[in-house]
Length: 86
View 1: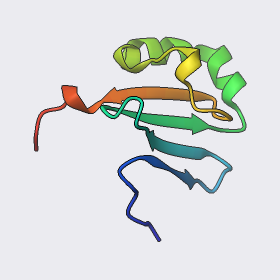
View 2: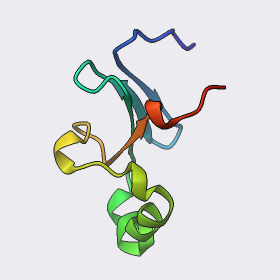
View 3: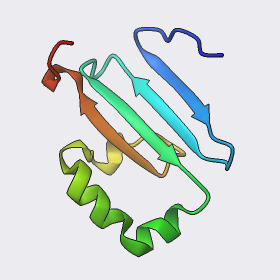
View 4: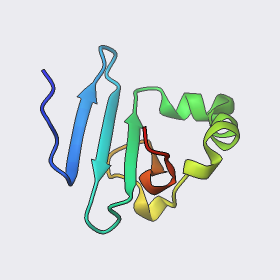
């Protein structure tokens, strides 16, 4: 069951194979939604082209290590102010 998230905070979802997905938003950067991912084989993925794929597909969403969510393998930042209204 999903719960409605607060304006600021984070929600974590789990996959059947021990993957974690987290969506987070905080008051320090209200226009930024962080999407983080963690899995058992992250190092193997990165050693076999994972960074190249991130650079190619999500270059504008890569954020500095200092802004990564703790205990997650990768965090992407999505600026909601850059998105059009739907």
